[in-house]
Picture 1 (cartoon, helix red, strand yellow):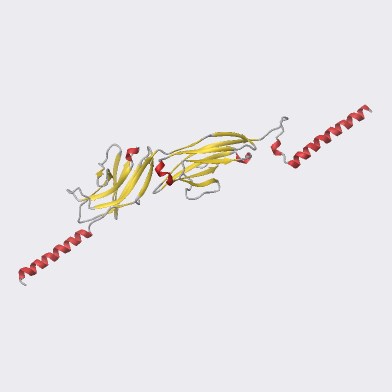
Picture 2 (cartoon, one colour; picture 1 turned 60 degrees about the horizontal axis):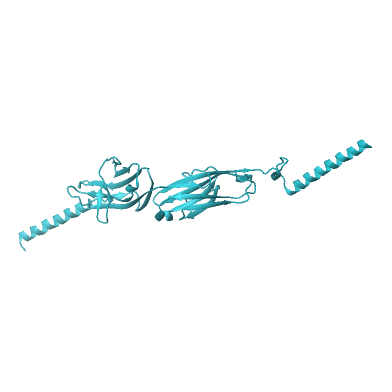
Length: 283
């Protein structure tokens, strides 16, 4: 083996080492969100973050794209009317974010973060895919205000507007008292929870039978759509329970059977005493 062959071997080893060093410098962007569904209420804003490490020996660009087909992910242009790009560059990791303003249903779709090395447009690193679902999300109660007498019954129906193919991500809780659904914990109930855990339905019914004064108050139907995030909405009904009064204006509901018997006995006693005095006056 001659000197020429030795030099070829040395040059080949150097090239391999440099190639490996370049490969080690590649930085794959990592999304802060796991792959899955991210629910967005129609008309609201949403932000996606792409985190990646800095590569000193490799200049690359990071951008977001939205899939148009299985093999086609169209790059989202920077700072359009409805989309705002932003960057954060701390010491360790950088972040490339997009914020979609006033989301419409057209904003629904599969988003992913990509890194490219100019002038090539082909990505060398791809982040996780996030499926954005922009949906109309409304909750309505059949009777917002109900007035009942003690002993009556009522059914409150909570109707939900949400995409039918994602109802398996929706569950319902009925709360008593003036409860904010945004502050409620969707994973567990509390002291005010009447019905909890109904899932996969587009409506829920709350039955109240033989109501008493204690049933007076606010009844809130809280609906949660949960996957990567928790989207909440709710509607509230007010129930007024009034006491039952006799023809004489006496509140009968305050008397139990024993008290009612005592009351009747007292009436008869007063009538008897009154008649006794009348007889004495006649005599």
